[in-house]
Length: 319
Ligand code: NAD
Image (cartoon, rainbow, N blue to C red):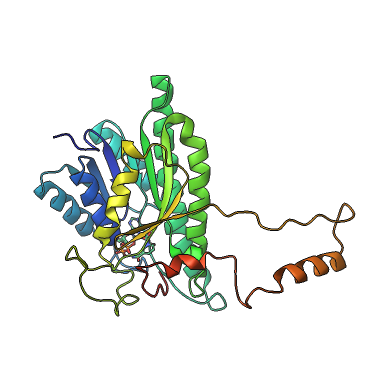
């Protein structure tokens, strides 16, 4: 029986634990050879020594289930290590087809107390980490498309968060990095469409090392016998977006958790105002915008807060 990802090669970053592990197992189950990347540090804040253990454990699990996997211990936020990660997939399996950017850390703090290091480290791992691998994978696909004289096969699945959609107050570094990832994905989707490559973003929710305290109050089993917040509920969407069947889905943003996928539509322009002259005066803006925002509840922001109120949603907290 042929599987949707037979013959394809995937990289999953941060796949030694949590969501990345479940996604790597799913891609392998669907037939892909998987390069399992993880830096392996013990702290969810990205502290401690690098450790080859987590990447190797996931790779061993894939092999034990009959799949093909290569463990890679490396920091995706380091440009050269990311280059080597992409090169290891190409050198070992002959090509790269799927890139799942998932590696991440947390350093939560209110904006008025956040240190420069807390800001820099989170932006570095999430946003620069996504850029680094994307840059080398994109160059690989462009080169292959040029050699082939037409589109090839490429899939990027990036990882944002409802923390960006909701603008969670205690996570300015994380919300900014996750918003940046959506911008990077949209730009990449536009740039690579002509080479046959799609780039989409998921906002997952799952009980992992990163969120075990946030979701401590959510318990039980769903109809599949799994924890409703199991990472295994996110992995099928990643497998689907990585597959040939998802060729039409490009530059999109989807929320996923516990048996639910929600499409986030692009922001729409609302009311539009034209100045009576060619530029606005303070008084003109005051009259127009005071009237426009008059009925809005105080504190309402641009954030897509309704996403948090979906049927299966649990209190989102800082995710
Ligand atoms: P996790 O802590 O269980 O796993 C993250 C993995 O990334 C770890 O194994 C860690 O070693 C690895 N990692 C960290 N920095 C790295 C680096 N520089 N290079 C390579 N690997 C690195 O967390 P998780 O919940 O599985 O998170 C996975 C992704 O999903 C993250 O991007 C996170 O922001 C995002 N996310 C998670 C949730 C959730 O509810 N768990 C919600 C929204 C978004």
